[in-house]
Amino acid sequence: MQRNILSTMFFFLASAILVTGFVPFALAADPGPIQIQNPIDSDTFTALLDRVLDTIIVFAGPVLLIIIVYAAFLFMISGGNATQLRTAKEVLKWALIGFTVIVLAKIIVSILRYAIAGI
Image (cartoon, rainbow, N blue to C red; front, side, top):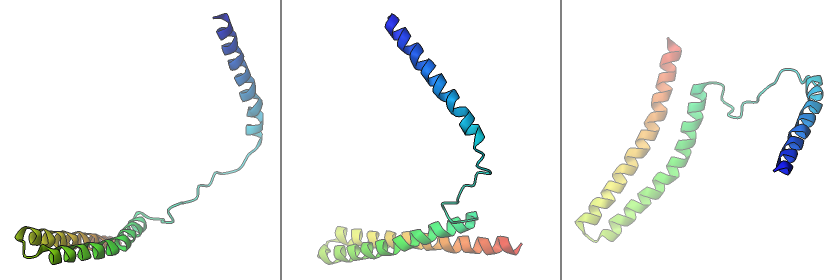
């Protein structure tokens, strides 16, 4: 028990010596004003939103193409089965709706930017 108390006291004493020993060095070096670089490369919120939407559109195009090919594959293998045909139509419909929503988001942001800038 006494050994644990001694080791704890030694730990705190060594920590205090180390911390107080580095304080003068930290106070002596004046680096000047701290500057933080902008990692996003967008100065305004609308510029950030444009970059995000452009990136989404770039990725959504190939995904849309893959889903259209998948829907065409479902059409071909349906063999006249009404359930599989309905599934293929639903896949194609929702893929086109999703891509339309993404493109409309870009258009709406552009319209709002020009409307707000015109005021």
